[in-house]
Length: 110
Length: 114
Image 1 (spheres, chains in turn blue, green):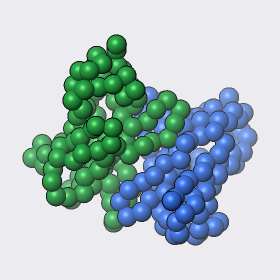
Image 2 (cartoon, one colour):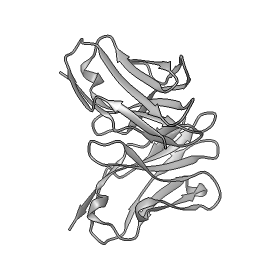
Image 3 (cartoon, one colour):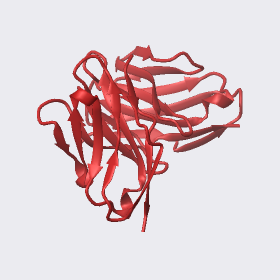
C-alpha cells in the first residue's frame, strides 16, 4: 500500500533562516505531488504541485520554492523565512482525483 | 474562479444528536467533491468523495453527503454524533485538467458536548 512520509513534525525557525521540508512517497510511481499550507484559522491553500521529476507549478506568489529531485520526493524550501511563513504545511500525493495527505509539519517562524 | 464556501466556522452539537455541515462550491464544470476530516495537529483523512452517479454518497465513520447540483451544495451529514467526531472538517472541489488539484473551504470546527 501507499504511504507518505513528511518531516519534521514540528519546526521553530528564526526569521531570515533557510527552510527545507521533505516529503517522500512509497508504494506508487510517478505520483502527482502537492504542498499545501494551512494558516491559523484558515483553510488549506495549494502552494505547489508536480506531475513529474523537475516539473513544478506554483499556485501563488510567495517566499517559498519547491523541487522534485526524484520521482517520489518533494521538497519545500525557502532561502529566508518570513514571519508570515508560519503555518501547518501538508504534503500530499494524488492519483487521478484523490489526494492522500501526510501528517504535516507545524512551522513557527520567530 | 473555483471556490468553496463553508459558512459555519464552528458548530457545537450534543453527543447523539444529528449533524449537518454545509458546503457550497463554485465551479464551471462537473465537480469532483470531497470531505476531509482533520484531528488536531494531524493530516487530513478522506471521509467521502463524489465523482458522478448517485448523488447520495456514503463514507467512513457513518458519514454521508448529498450532492445537489441546483444548489451547488455538498452537505455532510451524520445521524448520531459521537464524541470522537470532534475535529475540523474540510470540503473541497477537485479542479484542473483531471480534477486533481483540490480547492478547500476554510473548514468547520465541530465540538461535541456530552
